[in-house]
Length: 109
Image 1: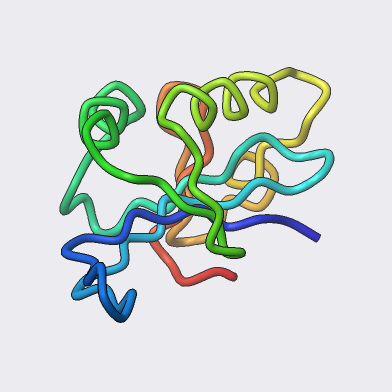
Image 2: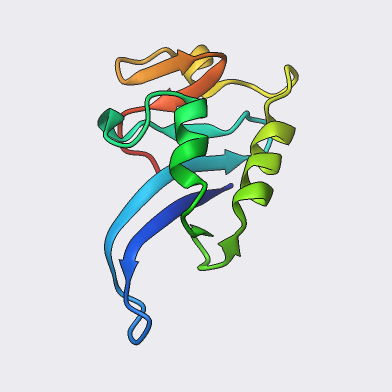
């Protein structure tokens, strides 16, 4: 079981609807964080992703707000050698390892 993380752009303060939801990736037990590449529309690697998330609100799939700092601390804690790297282990067509981080350009839940 894991937890997905998102950025919701242009969220209505009245009804809570977002015009755009960007999937950042998923945290799962025993695995390094798996990033969603999103076709490279917003970032191409982790340093670019850190710049992208810096001024945005990050939420998890339960609607909880996660600070940018807490999000990246969680990613760093999961990026240890004893945790498996999804893209490194499965090496499917739309999976890639960028600077040691797992990225997927396919859909995952």
